[in-house]
Amino acid sequence: MDAYPKSMYKLNPNIAKRIFANIAHDERLIDEILNDKSEELLDGKSERIVSIYLFLDDIRNKLNKLKDKIMSYDDANYILNIMILVNSEITQYYMDKAQKDGRFSYENEYSQSSIIINYIKVIRDDMQRREKIQEIYPNKEIIESKELKIVSECDLSIIEKHLEYLVLINTLMCMQISPFFNDKDRIIAEWFLCCFGDIFTNCMIEGIYMEPNTSYSEYENGSRTTTKMEIFFSQSNEDRYQLRLDFPHDDKECIHFNLYEPFKIAAYPIDYLEYNMLIKQYGDVVKNLFFHCGNRMWFKSQFKDYIDLNFTNNIEARKALLNLFETHTHSPVCDNSVSENDMKNFLNELFSAISIMDMSHSRYLKPKNIDENKELEYITLEKNVRNAAYKIDEAYLYNLQTGTIPAKLKEDLANIEIKLTNVLTEYYAKYTHEELNDLSLLELLMLVRECMIEHS
Image (cartoon, rainbow, N blue to C red; front, side, top):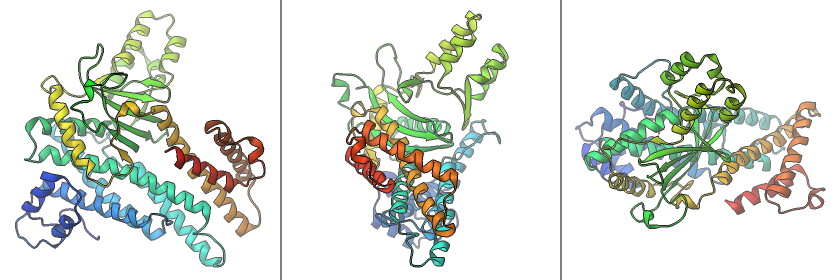
């Protein structure tokens, strides 16, 4: 689809109303939009949402056609161009919002997809290189190898997961302005958009889990029954987190977000103003406690350990900083004007809208049944498998073209063999070392993939 926002689609508002009312994926609706000849125009906000809706549908259709295939240069380039258009529209939304609220700064980042865009660029450029090598060696498996097939499967999964997050963002944008939702729904949608815009800048979304029905879950017993939504994501530095939406529980009387990293509770990041005030109050030592990502300063994983080591003689600062961490382990989602029933109604509307989308990587499961540590481990495992397959295939290409493999790449392959063996013998505990001794790297890799599929 060769189209650009505000240039091709002069959309009939009656068609847009059907999107805003249903927020549904409907091929007939797509055709009606594309074939509409009316003269009546949408306002800018509505046109943006409908344009994003169409672009996301286009990417989704392209990805569906690539199932069980290897992504070519042309495929990657096509997806890249549409993703850039989607990103520019969503980025413009966040920039407009920041300007309206008086918070706009050229130093801030507003893109929600810069990492995935760069990721797709790497895929595209690599496939262009491989296709040229294939022309030189027409009788060799260059772009149809088993290793590259694994790489492509992982790449498609990674892109699809982020695409589903963009569907979530577009749905929230729709709910924010749609006349078919009440004032509370529109207010909550705006709060979610602001939070996600802050947290997920320079991130890739790895999975979304939603409570199937929030109306009855409070009657259940057990831990984490107050959790209604979970989003797993990784940052540009490859740190992995889980963002959790929780209703009031224990001594926490407000609806709030929790952050979780592998095997420990994390704290919600602070803004630059609060960070600079801490430096002014406690000195440059504070810089060792945080790292920058997106538009916020994040608590380092070793935050408490560092304070234990470096603030033994400053009891006041130690107490204040530890209290800061504890305070930020629960971040209020909204103010007291929104009741629990308001939030439940909103979430049911949101989850209902998203449930009819084609979101195969998002699950409508009770979050209390999700093992967050296994999910976070799986994120790393999937990327390690992708990188292992790429390295094995890269060694094949080197040997094909030069008759040798660089020493560093040989070292990488040896480490990959150790890691794959450990995954099979220790993480999944399905094989013994003796059973794996005579297997090739590719065979080890295929066994790991089988285990991942079996346990997903």
